[in-house]
Image 1 (cartoon, rainbow, N blue to C red):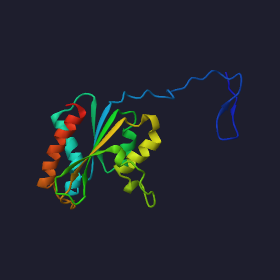
Image 2: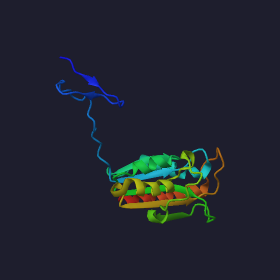
Image 3: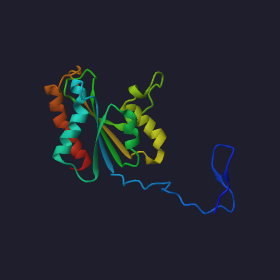
Image 4: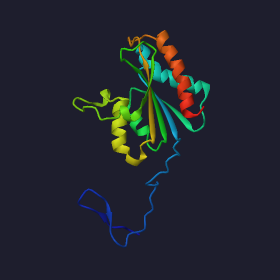
Length: 186
């Protein structure tokens, strides 16, 4: 049996009388179920206290979290954070901060307070942070945006390249671990 196939617009078309072809793969693959709570640790493991978010996620992984919680090392990839939030009930983000407060101070910030779209002038993939991800996520995900977003920020003492977490940042991280565990329902 032969089929007459053609098309001038770059697409393949099948004319009437052609065999009934079946797709080789499903066009809409099933998505895995989304875990309702997401904890994302953001920061750079190679820059001292900026590593507090990813380090916290690793500590939570070792301690264990409830089955309805997914842990993600968000590193410095803000756009990945935006897509990971899709369909979640709650998202908890942890990162370092530089506000001038005492090093190790822990701030709890409701997501809506930091999700306004920042200026996009000069914004590129390398400068795209989690706060940009919240703004873009709210716009892009619409109804699939999480019901609740909470951000924990740990005041950094040093973000020198190659340095380890300082004592104050480590102490702030330990306090934040307890706060996050309470936040996600231990």
